[in-house]
Length: 292
Figure 1 (tube, rainbow, N blue to C red):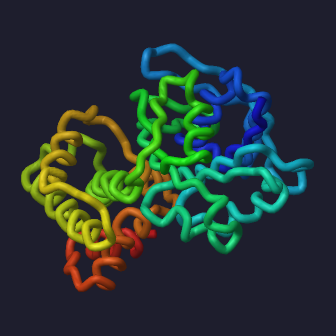
Figure 2 (figure 1 turned 135 degrees about the vertical axis):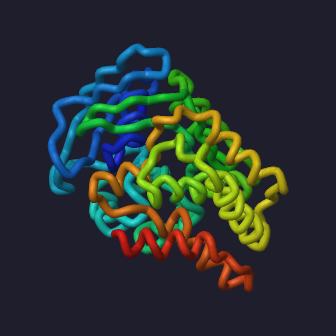
């Protein structure tokens, strides 16, 4: 039986913690949060409700022993705040899974942990938080991790959930494919409108252009990305619920910091390093950084 800690009680962290709290493989789930929560209430894709009561701690000094797994579900920019939790949670056998946006999972936490202790995770679980501990899990979703012993152990944790977890031998391609989706999602934060904005004149073309830049940079760093990706991303956006709100838009509407660097800035940064022009992602990162 595993003891887990989930750092970050947002839409992703809360959804994952709620599902794992039901797993027969998990003895205890500790939720590391800034403010206290009485419970997690997650509306699942089939309309049923999971009500979970994990142990909630609001200060690293409340951690008395390491756990088997730490799942980092904080925002990509909150590395320092997240790092404060790792010292008491991580022991000699602890594995750390990073469930964050972007393609720099390992690089972010290398200052705190050796690279071989960090498991990067690409998670696609559409979920929205309406209030602290109250989450709508819209679609089952997927988790993909690199192949290997740590990856297999992580996948096993989700065997009893609706989230489909798997391993891959080409994690770089999977991560950059997810980034192609995320970079186009900046349009929602830029316009202040939910998923249906893709149907407005010219928006689909703009999103395709952003994804094309991502594809070119991703190929330069070793990802195997096809020419179909721009159309695939737009088609996915067009078939999503028009009222869906991605995390970037949700953060902007709530006045919270945004993950513009992990979604768009990284494309501009790596594009510059490889001599690839990325004017659309650079523009998105610049405007959203100013809005922050």
